[in-house]
Image (cartoon, rainbow, N blue to C red; front, side, top):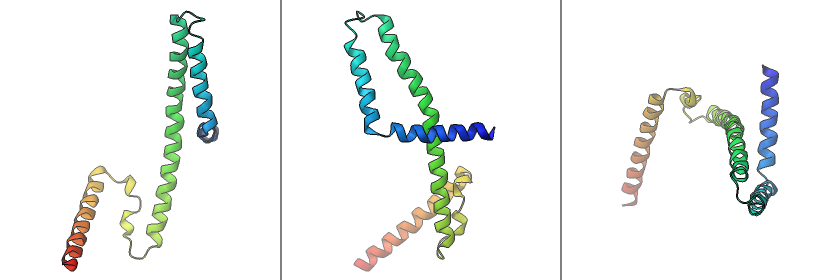
Length: 130
């Protein structure tokens, strides 16, 4: 199973890099233009329309998984970097490390605490400016 995941991870990274290029976008646009240009030749038939519909549906379906894999990897890397910054910063709250694994209620509670502290700082800044 690990070998299959490794192959998929490599494929997802390769696909991510290839599809992120402007040339790939240009090729996709050219494909649509060529498909459109062949319409009169195929007399705008149902089969002609089915080709683009099926092709785009398949590509979209497969890209969902590639994009999700890429997003998961990027999010995990970002969380690890943030956890490291929290760990090495003396004034940081170490309780925030691994926050993404906590239940939504705990995250809302911490978000409220931050909102309160920001409003306290804002009001203190306004008092000092007056």
